[in-house]
Image (cartoon, rainbow, N blue to C red; front, side):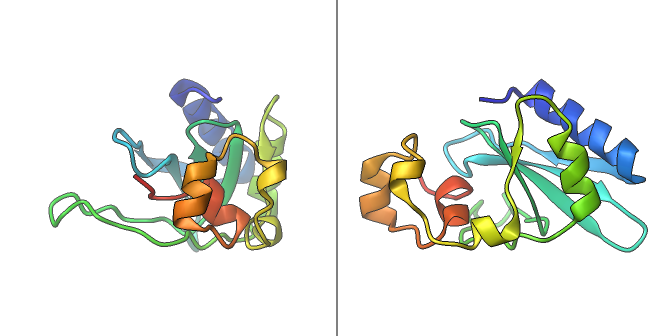
Length: 138
């Protein structure tokens, strides 16, 4: 498990190492989503470092907007992206695992991820590893 403080530190350190700037944190406070986002802006784009709340697992994705003013609902899989320099900088943080888009878009193997509850697997039927690890399930 990674604390919010550790997540913030990892984002700031990786941004500094890669010439980006942390512009926002979107921290999950309720049941869903099960991940936090740290938005890092670069000259040509902004990406989100996503952190599973119950694991020390990170990924890089397109930023998601959660509109609490409307109804607070957002669902569906994240769009994971390749940002090699950022992923390499995040890997330098001790104890963190950064998953690639190819891993996250690949099939979900429940045996390899025993922390994902079997009831959730049965009900939500995640097709990919990314859906199983970073989701809006309640």
